[in-house]
Amino acid sequence: MICPTDNAADIDQSKFWDSENGINWDQHRIGWAIAGTSALITVILTCFSVLQHCRSYTVPREQRQIIRILYMPPVYAIISFFSYRYFRSYTYYSLIEVAYEAVTISAFLLLIIEYVAGTAAGHRAEGALVRKDKRPLPMPFCCWRYRPTKAYFMHTVKWSVLQYVIIRPAISIAGIVCQKYEVLCESEGFNPRFASVYLSAIDFVSISIALYGLLVFYGLTSDELVGRRPLAKFLCIKLIVMFTFYQSFVFTALEGRVIKATQYWSETNIANGLNALTICIEMVLFAIGMWWAYPSSEYKRPGQGKTSIWRPLWDSVNYMDFAREIWGSMRYFFGAATHRHDRPIDADGPKMNFSEAFGIASSDGRGVSKLVPGEEYSNSYEPDWIRLAPYAFSGPGASVESPQTAGFEHRGSIRREYDHRAPTLP
Image (tube, rainbow, N blue to C red; front, side, top):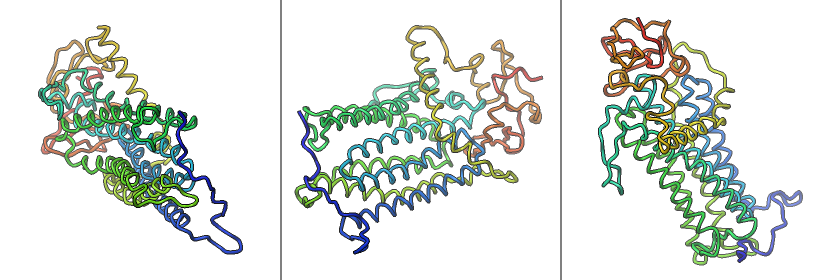
């Protein structure tokens, strides 16, 4: 079956600017001006926020994810402006718009993993989980319990979120193809004769798994995230998704009741246009909120000059880290299914015990641990990941990394930090 068109039969042939009469200020063009101005303000605010991170790009592993998250308001604002301006192609723009949601949610997971990893030796999130006990899953699966120290845990959490990076763009591509052949028909709701209901069901399951995995990891590591505004950071993302999702239902419900068709705009056109206009205005507020929730001030180092903006911008659009995480988890699950490994496949060297994970002891390469003397940190031994990503974290029971030595210090005492992949220290 072919879906009935959502567009009015008549097309407005007049232009925004008329050389004889000036600007034609009808309702559509007033909205056009408001949407464009709001999108421009959002872009300016985001550019300023991104530039601040680029000029203080001292922790690439964290800041590349932050910059990706900061892109969310301008992406939504720009695409919403075009969906308002070219309202007859609204469905195509809306399908492209929601695809970036998957990138943002995945970037947020990798960001909090980096936060947690910064509190453990070796900069590995697994090292921070060794102190966690077996616990029940969040609702509605609280009858089952999981053990975060198991090798499968981190791979499962990553895959549960990163699968959305694959599925959501695939849904958008499928939706664009279906719309081209007039079989998508979003206006028909849950009509099983059209593709919209099936794509929506797949999307609902995929994003539910992603958000649940994010909730599991956040609840497990909430103590390690103290002082990093994790809730504010997450709400800036989730509220965008919620607002855009639920307000579309509100405007759709008003069709035929409050919203009436005009000569050039059908009821669906008007509902879609109001939704796009509202998104453009909201993104100004969300750009300000993200500026506050993701400050660049915590990455500035005293006496350090400004960094180049080109590497941060390239890192933010280079999604190879997503591909590596997805591929690594797939390899792990394949290896577990075929019993080809008995430890995480991305682990380097022997598996750390509790003491090694927190820098209390070091391995001699044969699985035997020796206490590390409490001598001053040597600049001659400086793991690459510390040099590339100096990280400062203060929280209950956490250690602090010095930007000068890239070591970790406790108040009142200095201890040597040991990377389990390095040779035995004397």
